[in-house]
Amino acid sequence: MSKSNQSRSWREKVHEIIYEADTPAGKLFDIILLIVILISILLVMLESVESIGSRYASLLDISEWVITILFTLEYIARIISVKKPKTYIFSFYGIIDLLSTIPKYLSLFILGSHSLIALRALRLLRVFRILKLTRFIGESANFGKALKRSRAKIAVFISFVIVLCIILGTIMYLIESDQDSGFTSIPRSVYWAIVTLTTVGYGDIAPITALGQLIASLIMILGYGIIAVPTGIVTSEMTKSDEKLIPNNTQACTNCNEAYHQDEAEYCHKCGHKIHDA
Image (cartoon, rainbow, N blue to C red):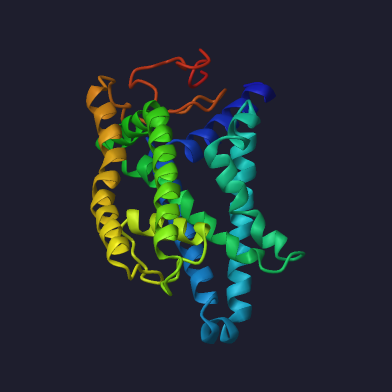
């Protein structure tokens, strides 16, 4: 075997282990990765507890450095195992991996950046690849597509809600501004309208006039209907969708890193490259 073939074979083995979960080695790698992520998050949480953070400061710091180095090596391995590194570096997981690795290094120069390590929790999204839950993988993809198709309708709806809150807030300001009820300005009244319409109800501002309380009651009732609208829009799009679920395998193209190919696929459906070179 030539030196180039040996290099290619080595890169493919690394790629198969860290990007796919269909092999025992790939599944073991991802499980270990998730355990380390959980440990890292636990360390950050414990460090925020003053009594623990002050008593075990050195141990926590050393442990965090060990985990950071491990994630750095993993990040480098992910880059060198693909033929087009930019496909990983600028992908969703690539950005999350970078953001969850650099805070420890930044803490050497910038105070307060260490807490950003909690971003590693987002890496737990990889659990879907490990568990190979076809139903959840497919349904989450369909849900994402339904959200994308619904974005125009949802944007219009949110714009309507914003305008409605401004109008209602202005009306409440005109009604309650002469009373000692907290409606001291239109922006503050709009804030009250948003809190009331979303049925949060902090209670820091409340109308005291009969007309104001009547309008507040109508806004509360209206809030229940408004909350259900986005759900209905997305559900409608999901119902109309006749697309098939994403396949259960986790094959990833070594060229463009596209994942979830058909079970018997030999070539990438995105770039046409052979998924695994011979």
